[in-house]
Length: 68
Image 1 (cartoon, rainbow, N blue to C red):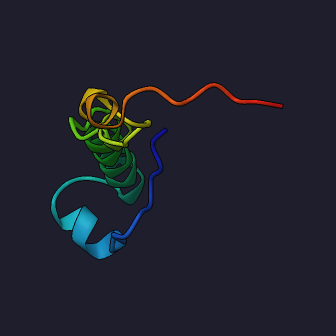
Image 2: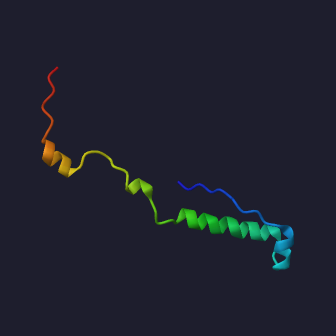
């Protein structure tokens, strides 16, 4: 899931001096940030530990059967 937070503001005077309107520059900036965050190679969910691994199981063995 990607979240976008806009931290830059476009000054209309600065945009007009470069030959772009403020709206076009904002759209370009949005898509630029979108692609950076949407296709980021860092995926933290791949690194979360999901439980004991094979080394833990080898050291501790299996759990004893539960008696109710």
